[in-house]
Amino acid sequence: MRAVMKTHAGPGLELKVVDIPRIQPGHALVKVDAASICGTDVHIFKWDQWSAGRITPPIIIGHEFSGHVVEVAGDVTRVKAGDYVTSESHVICNECLMCRTDQKHVCAQVTILGVDINGCFAEYALVPADNLWLVDPVLSPETACLLEPIGNAVHTALSGDVTGESTAVFGCGPIGLFSVGVLKAAGARAIFAIDPNEKRLSIAARMGATHLINPRHEDPVETLRSLSGGYGVDVVLEMSGHPEAIRQCFRALRNGGRAAMLGIPPGPLEIDLGNDVVMKGIRIEGITGRRMFSTWYKTSALLGSGLLDVTPVITHRFKFEEFEQGFQAILSQEAAKVVLLP
Ligand code: NAD
Ligand code: ZN
Image 1: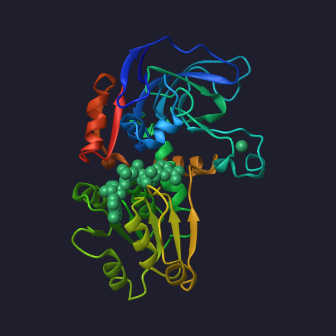
Image 2 (image 1 turned 60 degrees about the vertical axis):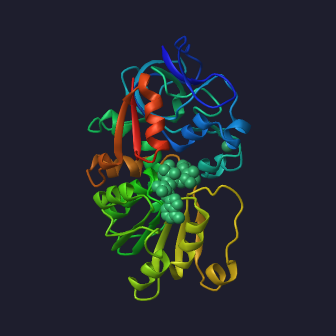
Image 3 (image 1 turned 180 degrees about the horizontal axis):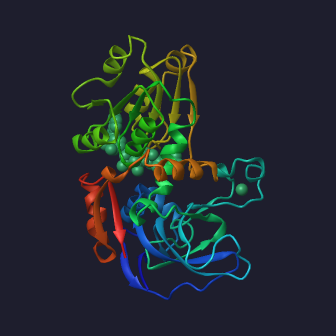
């Protein structure tokens, strides 16, 4: 089978022909219909400090995909050949304190498809059957491969009440854009989308943003406060990881408001904890991954019912052979979500 691989420690990826994985206990072999490129894959492509410390080549990368089960191990009953599936990318231990107390999304021993073990940028992927999610047949393969990152957005946006609230999304990358759609579906009163990239802001408008703010042209804190009765917004979702946006999101929040933090900053950063957090009485929640599997039920319901349509976020489609063009489209900031089709 063809597979997009990191073959050596260094920048770049290669398309190789390798053996189809042999079935293993507890696993299912899935024929991949569509896969999508995540920011994590871009880090691995570039071979930045994080990936150099984490990835052991050779490895097939990629963790967002949809496909059809072709074979299951003898001990697997959850799925069968022919099932239309996508997958949770976090492989959990089911043994640690968190796994045993309904917090599987923060498992202490998590491994990740396409990061720690072979992933899905290939014609076939071998996946623990417990990770597979049966896809609603109304969803296209290219929407189905996005359930995992949409799940990040659902987990963040719905980590508290948003119905009737004024909300702000800092950072309109793919996950921020999905979040705008989730906030709209959940009935947020106002959805402010903040991003320096005009293309992404225009997609945010199509996803349901009520106001677009480009921090290059205006101060998001001033604008958000002035459009929220001088108080600031009820809820912020931080989805950029940019240190300045992180500081701004706390200042743009009203007293007693709520901040859900998904973006990962490049390193430690300074915030005015006393004035912007403690004295304002705000609530901050760090968000990682997706709740297993309550987030998946919600995500599926939003997509299957038509309440959420993510097609505006898919800007580029490439064949596996053209994967480099897909990575370049993201690096040049032309693309939002890039789908690879085997
Ligand atoms: P992305 O890099 O495509 O999106 C980030 C967006 O932030 C870009 O559109 C960029 O233009 C924008 N931005 C940059 N500076 C800004 C500023 N000052 N104000 C507002 N916006 C600004 O990333 P993504 O794939 O959508 O992921 C979003 C973030 O979430 C990243 O930091 C990523 O590392 C992180 N992430 C976290 C998890 C998790 O489980 N916590 C999972 C996936 C991704
Ligand atoms: Zn665990």
